[in-house]
Length: 118
Length: 110
Image 1 (tube, each protein chain N blue to C red):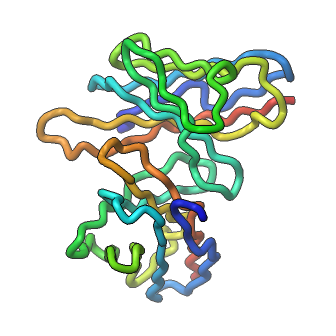
Image 2 (image 1 turned 180 degrees about the vertical axis):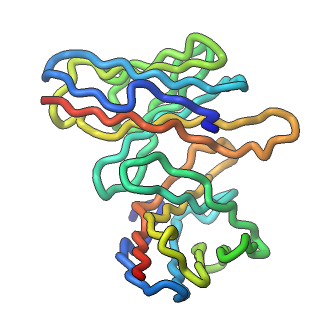
Image 3 (image 1 turned 30 degrees about the vertical axis):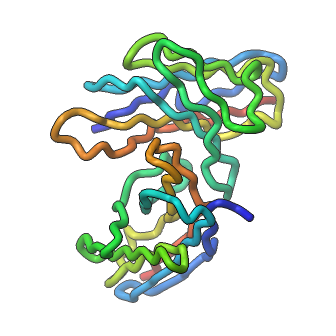
């Protein structure tokens, strides 16, 4: 079963509105989660690293005021796309490593959230 | 130059065929390497890690060539279910901030 869960899987919103996407680690704690974005037929691009209890670190070119990240607990990170515009339409995917003892430390991805901004 | 580059394909192969493709990376200090499989409109799922000595998992074989900075994936005895996009991922340091290639599409036909 899934070890990282994302919600919603699909969202359609009007231009100018804000959209929140949740990423949860199931059965394990994740002090760090990663947020990626993928445009059609392109690679996953790392947007930011979400750090529990501290500010997220953003990759070059990613606007932190537009993509708000909150990692309020050890199992939940949220990404809010503020004042969304059609060019923000994309597939947003979070990931986290399962670092429990005896596990491989593999990076697991959430199911992804497909955002369409009209 | 992109950090990670892949031949996008598509590779159209008949069932039972062998298909292989590479992925090049630009950062010579990269620490670890992976192949992910991504089905249409789904999240990537880890297919296999790539070890320095090369490794095999059933019909899948991965190789790493540090000197030439590429990794490869070979699929033997292709099945219809192998049709997917294969993403290579490189961990430039040891922080798991993976850099992904754009993917190689493989289509296995009956």
